[in-house]
Figure 1 (cartoon, rainbow, N blue to C red):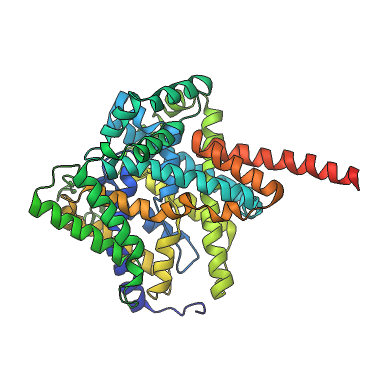
Figure 2: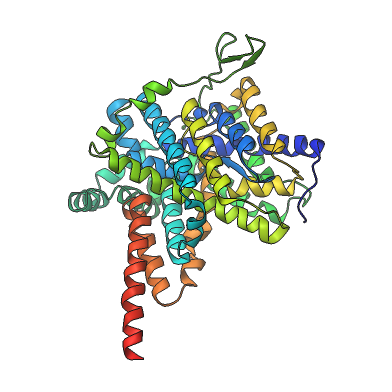
Length: 462
């Protein structure tokens, strides 16, 4: 497929398809971040609109992804923070973090980081991705196999796995990811603890989403299988009185609320956060040991890791379709969209491979398709209440179906050779057990050390 010629009608159609097929993901990734799923719907439009204005790609889409959701939750200690301060405080924390990541992205673009990001070793990227995907799996399983996600946490805490978690955290305080690894280990080894109904919905939806391409018509756009699975699960929840966790009530902005433009002539039904208040959120004090330096460094690492997704997507479109791109511009687009995310209460955003591929497949010809999707999400919110009875087990299936295959059989890690294999495995392990930020940093250092020492040894032998 060559680079597209501008066609506004195709953009409208593509944008509408994207808006419909992405709704389950929006809710599911919000749950992964650690707050109510409906927030994924109410905050998705503004960041994508900002992205559509700033990006130079006709196909690339942006939003909260499984990677950004897990990284934000891990960096901020999501579960513990909600338990101590409540969900509203956590939303403010996540929003503030998005602002800092937006600022860091723009600063890094101006400093020329965009081109440097393309030089990150493949071994580090491969191991990092696997570690994050394990974290995504750990976040999804509690609501997938149990009627309520808190059940698994309680079971792990009173088991031998809980003892291991406490020992590891006492030894390495930064090992926040070990809790997720323990959740997976317990759930897999104790199937008798699963809730029969929730697990059945979860497993059925997972299998359907993963295998649907084998029997659904090829003419249907990607994401159709996700819509079908969640629709079926929602119907089941309504007609059979599902008693497990569901999305719940989805509030909408009232007629007098939202953003008013041009003297009230245009009403945009989104609620803006108080940006000044967000900058005063005690994020450094509560999450980064009181260090603003550590906060900015972590935000910069998050921005750099985020940008690797964009590099991969844009490079693929360039090699496959001849669509040229500018690294500085796309990094600035990432920054602008994260500033918008913070302003409306969203978690950090990045390039989304799955949604970008859908845009290309459905015939998008320009950034207008992104803008259409964003506007539909913003203005169609009153209709989203149809998702209220959707079981969280079905949304967990959407997430798990995207990562489980690579987690179980990490072909790209196994394909690495020599020191690359060692670096890939080490990066994956540290990322999974500690946090994505620490894992990525350790992977880079390990790669540099091994490259220097092994390279020096080979020269001496020669």
